[in-house]
Length: 187
Image (cartoon, rainbow, N blue to C red; front, side, top):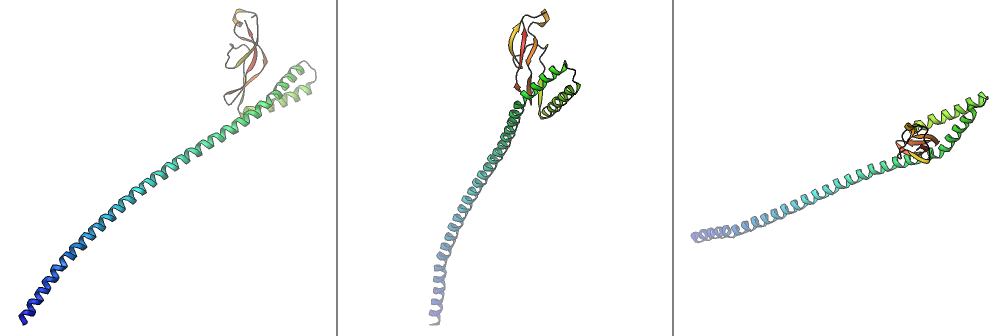
């Protein structure tokens, strides 16, 4: 009987081994499937993270472009507003020039000096902002800077096509035409 028990014990151990082997194989298969699933999830999450990072970088680049463009537009707006303000002061400059012309024939030195001082200070301030006078008298007529009011017969051949007289002074502001010089051209 001892042998039977022993045999039974062996059989049971063999049976246990036989039963345990498929259980271990099943566990290995389950573990392998689970590992595969985890790898897939890691790959999916890695891809998703890369996409999100790419979207973030694109968004940051778009924002940087927007910020730069907004700053440029603000600068243009300020320059435009300054140009409009300076343009509004041009008639005052014209009046000062006329006053200086009239006073040049006068004997009132105080009036000449006071008007000249006002004109010079105003002109210096406007020059500091970017205003420049368009010199026209004696220059070749140029439609980029001059507006012909009329033509008169030239006194000499060398004055043909040139500016004979300036009716209204022209100005540029930061390199752009603010007001064309109104001129008389020799024909």
